[in-house]
Image (cartoon, rainbow, N blue to C red; front, side, top):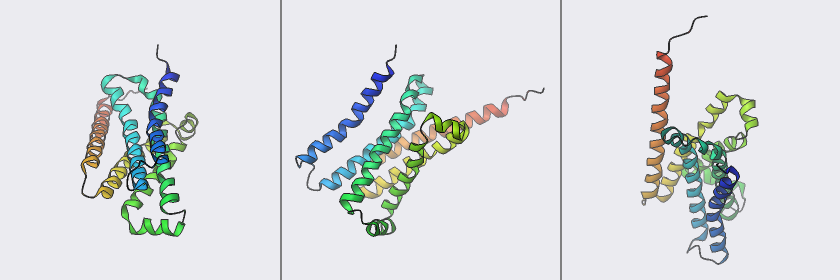
Length: 205
């Protein structure tokens, strides 16, 4: 019998281990020559990783029949938001000293910052509406439409990462490939679903 609570504990433990290492290395000044850049880069990668893991749940369920994975999708999505929030807070406080004018100027002058801000803005309603209560309030269809923004967030995240690294695009390319596969699977699934509906005869009363 599956122990959901224990599995959630394991997910949380594994999700927080990278942050613990970052905090430990930061305390002992082991984050390299540019610790702020390293911290921002790592939390950004963790955000994108959790976004893609969350988006992978549905394909894994349908392809391999791993239906219990659905119980952990919300948690994984919230960890994506958690690391995105840490990423934003770190940038706002330690890079820009909470200077709103500097942040606005950065958004205006540096496109990758604007893209990152847009991605975070889209993550906010996804995190807020992740509960069962919001599913009921919005209705299943509307909730599903809203949460398709996850794919947009993933695309923006890859672009943000790509623009930051400039020349060394190996890791952004890997993330981009995963996003392309997930989007391709989604589009093929939608087409098959649409074709199945169109070929189903109407039932007259």
